[in-house]
Length: 160
Ligand SMILES: [Ca+2]
Ligand SMILES: [Ca+2]
Ligand SMILES: [Ca+2]
Image (cartoon, rainbow, N blue to C red; front, side):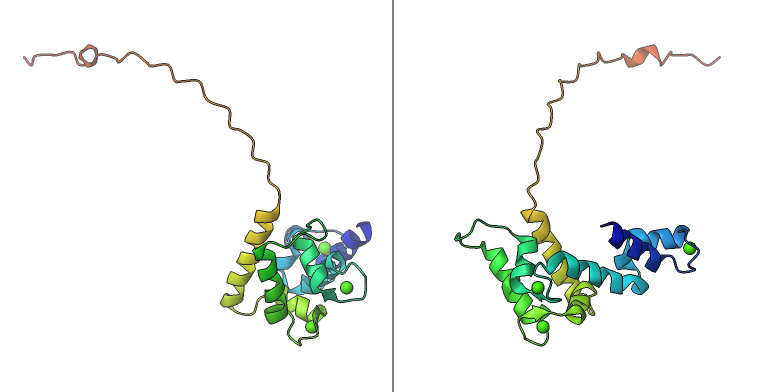
């Protein structure tokens, strides 16, 4: 992880002075938004997903990032859809795995249509994360304030 931070730091540090000033710091923190850091993002994603270290992301590695079911149990339909999407859309050359170029295309969708696909992907991520919802403490009932009588503030004055 340290190596990764250093690598990303160096990529973000455009003028190479060893410090990150505003735009550079932004690039370091959100590399996916910066074209010059796409390579790093792809590299990091590959490292995250490529569990067997063969330099490609196989469909199972891709799915493993999304879903970890107990062995033998059927995968939920949204995961089956992800598999299909992987093979149909992400794997451009149809060899059943993603190379760096395909990962890059996946991460930086070239058309608005892809953005929708990506949003869907993120929603799946969110769905699968086990979010613990804490019970919202009940508020005590608001004490009722006695209504102020209006007549007090409106003193009737007669014009002279
Ligand atoms: Ca700098
Ligand atoms: Ca692999
Ligand atoms: Ca491929």
